[in-house]
Structure formats: structure tokens, C-alpha cells
Length: 113
Image (cartoon, rainbow, N blue to C red):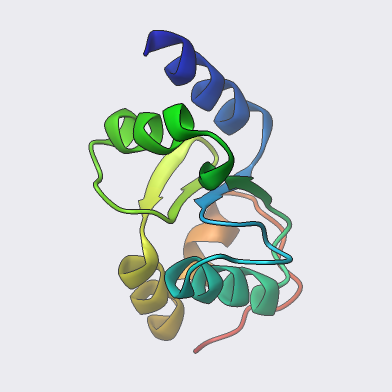
């Protein structure tokens, strides 16, 4: 499984914001992934969506990589931020916008939920 961990690390290293999700940003395949996509799109944050449904090894590998049992998983500047519930709470409190700003990630608007 170390190979899949290397692939995950490579994607995280090459992109400021990465969302490991079920489906794609254009076509989320679960409600939780869809909620995080809506939040990132609302904030105007550029991000890379990675469809874990396309690869079973990736789907299991990302859970082991973070020791986090659920998908979606959001990474900002190489750091695991959280899953849907955490991202939604951070968005609603304004903490997500602050976190992105402090990380140097451009957002179209400093929106509050």
C-alpha cells in the first residue's frame, strides 16, 4: 500500500487544495461530497477533486493515509483539515475562510455561512 500512499502524497504536494471525494466536482456521487463541493465553489476556492470511486486501492488508501474513516477528505497546503461535518462547521463559523486565507489560498470571497 505504500505506493498508493506515495500517489496520495504526490497529489497533496502538487495542489494547494485537494478534495478526496466520491465522484467529481462536476458530478458528486454522494451528498457529503456534494456539500463540500458547494462550500468550496461558493467560496471560489480553486481545488483539485480526486474521485476515490475510480480506484478501490485509493478509496481504502486515503482512509489509512489520514487514519480518518470517511470520505470526503479536504487537504489545504498538505494538511488534512477534515471531512464534511468539520468543513461545514468551519464554513458556517467563518473559520474555513480564515484558514484558507492564512494558508495563502486565494478565495473569490471571504464568505461567512
